[in-house]
Length: 194
Image (tube, rainbow, N blue to C red; front, side, top):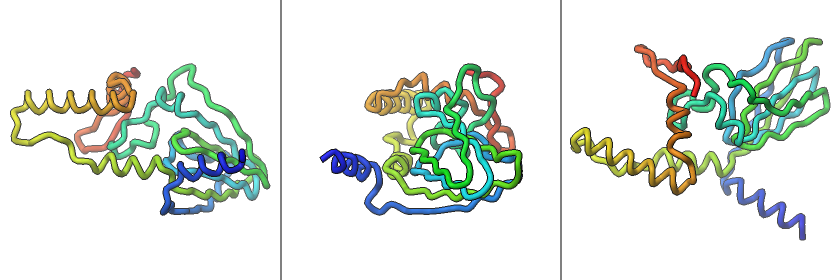
């Protein structure tokens, strides 16, 4: 019975047409990836050498300098990690595996003792599926509206939408303040923390 419950919970998190992808990583000593998160389930298999991971659950991810969804670099942390935000450390050796759920921020570093070889397998999650649907959803605003009406309509829409998700507007605003665009259109970390 318990196995059936676990299986049904997992199947509700994976889309019916889930895409499965994999990548091999061959890393020089002391190299790694910057802080980021994925929207897919991630299974890491360490084949050779060592690699460390620092993972941040979603409750901590919202405290990190990620721009909001819709930004070109929305899954990449921009700027410094705020003081007091620490993750869970995992050190993998050859033969070890690590499961990283969707939306768990993480950064990696290969060990100092030689090259690190690992394989990742990603399986699409319902998070990615719904994120695509939400970002494709047209906003109920008209470009012909005067600027003040457009601003009030956008604010009302955001408050209703975020209220339905139980997400405070202040949290979204704090994330947007972390990022600004340069004149060339490139994203840069904002100079001030929230």
